[in-house]
Every structure is written in C-alpha cells, then in structure tokens.
Length: 176
Image (cartoon, rainbow, N blue to C red; front, side, top):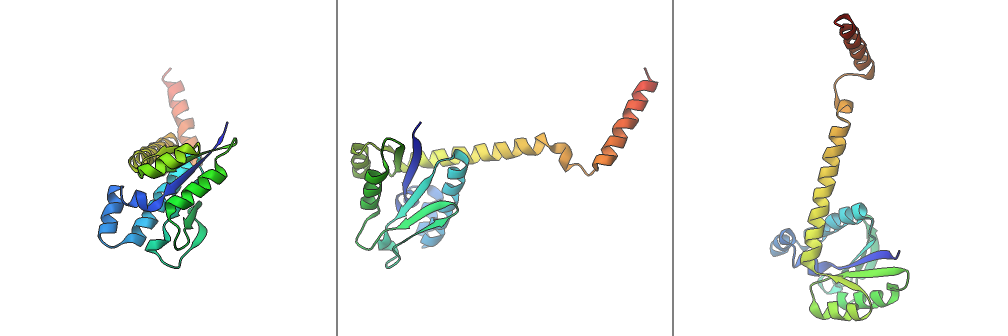
C-alpha cells in the first residue's frame, strides 16, 4: 500500500474555513495560521497522514523558511515563489510508486496541474468537513475511554473497592 502525503495550501484554507476567515477579517492572520496548524495537526495525528502546510511568503516578506510545528512540516515559500508553484514542485518530487500525494486547495488551476502529475486533490471545503468529522471522532473516542474506565475516576481506592466487593459477596451468600 502506498504511503499517503497531504500537501495543504495554507492561505487557501484560511480563505475558506469559516472560523479562519473570521480571524483573517479581524486582521489576525497569524492567529488564523496558528489555528489552522493546530487543527491540521490533530487531524494528521489521528488519521495517521503526514502533512505539509505551505504558505506564500508574500504575506510575510523575508520569512522564507521550513520548520516543524505541532508535528507538521510548515513551509513559507521564498519571495517570488507562490505556494502553488512550491506545491507543484513538491508534488512532482514526492508523488511516486511508493507515495500518493493529495493536494488540498480550491484553486481549480492548481487542482488540474497536480492531477496531471498523478496526485489526488481535495478542496478546502472537503478538507474542512474531514477535519470536523475527525474532531468529532476524537471527542467520541475520548468520551468512550472516559466511560470505559469510569471506575478509575471513582473516589474509592482499589483497596476500598475490594473490601466493598467482599462485603457484597458475604451479604449475597447470607441471603441465598
């Protein structure tokens, strides 16, 4: 089975996800980037899909860099390079017999370009729905774990629970 890799056009997601659009509209672009990275990190970890988020450097001049944050690879392109051209280059380099690249963008021209290189595509809205669905799965899973080990959250110690069970067994035997 091929290894999966998801390349995400960061500003494309910020321009499409409702809570990120709101932050961007309040001139909180850095907060929107941070929130996007947190949500994608949770998604990546739970789904087991490596993820690279690419941002245009045009919004943060002079920042060209790559770094790890929240166990994601984050890339700010060089000045003069768009996120689209960076994603196209990375798709060509990484999409091979062993790796299936999927590109998250709503830019139709970008979708066609990466599709012609053998990559799959997912729109910003589709990724948003997938991230929300994963968040619900995480929440449900956490609740299931909490109730599965409900006794662990009891105020009673193990010794006290053992003594109570012994007492219950004795009382049951008396009434039989």
